[in-house]
Image (cartoon, one colour):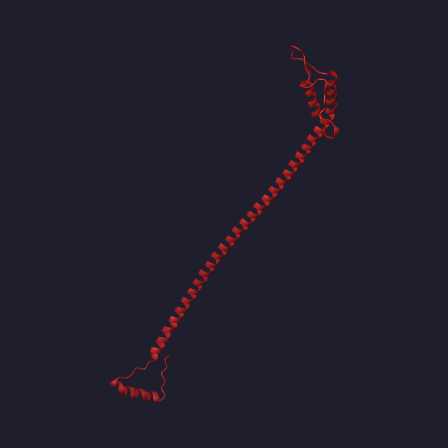
Length: 190
């Protein structure tokens, strides 16, 4: 241990001794104090101890002001950081909602487009079937008309057919030819 009467102040930054330095000096003063014989008590230089305590008390307001200022700055920084974080979260929430909305709109548009295409396909199939049915009916009617016309043509042709005479009927054919030559005309209406 060093001599209790010898007190060396701790060096401080820029010649200003802070509260921590003063407290270290006070501790050193007590640690280096002379022991009382046959006791755990020590002798501390009263003037030095009081001077250190006065310096500590004098530096307390400055240190406390600095600490309070730092705490206030920290609190303001935290408030600002929370405000910015809340703004970022709100912006992200709005953007996410827009993205979801766009996705929903796209999904709804896709669903609507699929419904329109399905409806158009169904309508096209229905119209095609209706057109085919209509054409089939018209063709059936036309076929029936043609069959009637063909039947009438066949009957008319059968009436107009002149029997070809066989060997027995050669005289009759000549007779028929003579009659025809004489200007007689077959009238089918009679």
